[in-house]
Image (cartoon, rainbow, N blue to C red; front, side):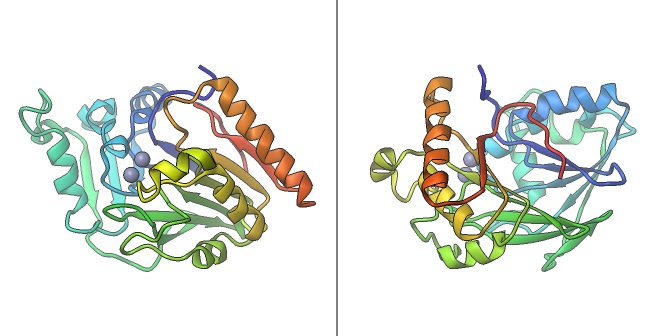
Length: 260
Ligand SMILES: [Zn+2]
Ligand SMILES: [Zn+2]
């Protein structure tokens, strides 16, 4: 109830109020309603990877069925499949009653795979995730301020295409905000090694080593209660104090918003 049950969907607003949406998890449904209420119909869309929990909100994004909507999809095609293929597959019969061709929105796909790309005042740097079937994390930089979004990233196991812990530390170095996968406790992680997610202690260790200012624990386990999640945040704060750091740590909740 406190941390929320939606799957991944993050909205970023640039200083000129351009909209960047990262991933199309179930949170996209409510975001769509909010954007319609605000009469905002132009969006940039970025995907981390093609797993269902990051795509399944797409057919429920109401602006898709409105002619004034324009969506620009940025970033690299994922291993073995393009964004278009992934999205049309979510909506193909018998999986969904409305077909991909019923979408009224104008969707523009960027077929290139640039090393970095620019959206309004924000420069976006992708990094390969350590995750089954691969994917991308992102660093968003505006006026020297940095937000790093690394979900579905396993820090203690190197999947094909993934990087080692040092590379993620360098990528996150000095960020104002890091949001990182923190699905497991250390005890749970022993049973789920190689499933593609990190323990919260590994995420915290990354944040401390990279000297980031704030860490948001993310991709929280769906069976975790609010009380258990609060205990995890408390444990992180104890570890931070023990290590003499000023890092701020919190669990990411539904509808949370932050200004950098
Ligand atoms: Zn995944
Ligand atoms: Zn996921």
